[in-house]
Image (tube, rainbow, N blue to C red):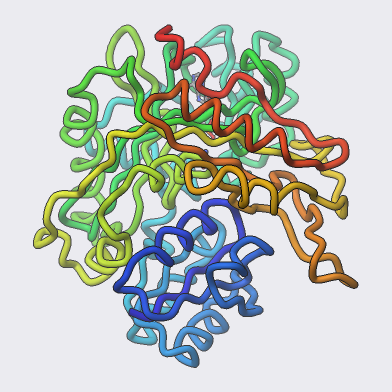
Length: 420
Ligand code: AMP
Ligand code: GLY
């Protein structure tokens, strides 16, 4: 199978890595990719937001499957353009991707499908905002309605800060605070059948101890030893299948990856958000544990053949990933700094630990030097017989990497590994 992956993050590197290990994949392309993906796939230049350009590239390459990684092209309709060109594509239509593109739309779908989520108000004026904040009380949860790369949500006890965030957005969703641990559960769907993957936990805050601002995600682990073994089945029945059914009944079937961000509250599971694509960094740990070759699974979702697929096979290993971010992330990151130690990790830590690239590129004048080119730069991923071993391997590998001014969390999966 000839596969084209669209995107340039650590998620796309993880996808390309798994696809490159799949014997069914005979050619692997990625656009635009990054310095790490270049080691497993052939890179191409494309504007990932331009559906015509992406479908033209797919046709020119003879792609038999296109995987659209990030949310922005999906919300812009890039998957539709590829589908119109007659090429199977893994990723939802523009209309179905509104599940991520608009929090108000997602709330409407959940209400219609009876999916448990936080009570909420959609507000467009300061008066409505003030009323909603008052109705729920602290802690306040204020969400920009549109796409914001994981940075549009403010959770705070400070009424003024909550109102200020709302004032900076056109339309906001203000909702009830959900208490309890968070779980990310991904499901692959063709619009009818739903195949849940293994759950993972993401660390959204920038600093140790869940302090600091929200980010796109600073690390993740899987499995979740503390979670109820029936969690996946429950979420399939109460969240994933009803949501997929609702979108199909609306005439906008969702095919691709449905990501449920969940809070396990004292009153049961609640949806915090939906995303329309693989999560980053959770994908790095979920794919590290998937034994079934990936290409056939994604292709079956793209062609509506998921019901015929045998059950997925999973490794008993645990996986941990730790993100290395640029100086000042999630603010405007500093870029262009050289990254050292990548060859040492490949020599000393493989195959149990490896580096997945996000914001990296080759230095302009030197193909041997990789430099930082974004907020989240690298994702150091490791597997082990349990979370303790996977953590040790991830942090040992991370210790070999040099990036001036960079930051990372030191407590990824620490509590879960300690059985807390
Ligand atoms: P979102 O972009 O909706 O995933 O929100 C980002 C993060 O904000 C989530 O992972 C949670 O940590 C936090 N958050 C969002 N909604 C709520 C809520 N209703 N209650 C508590 N925390 C929330
Ligand atoms: N890890 C959070 C996200 O992908 O949105």
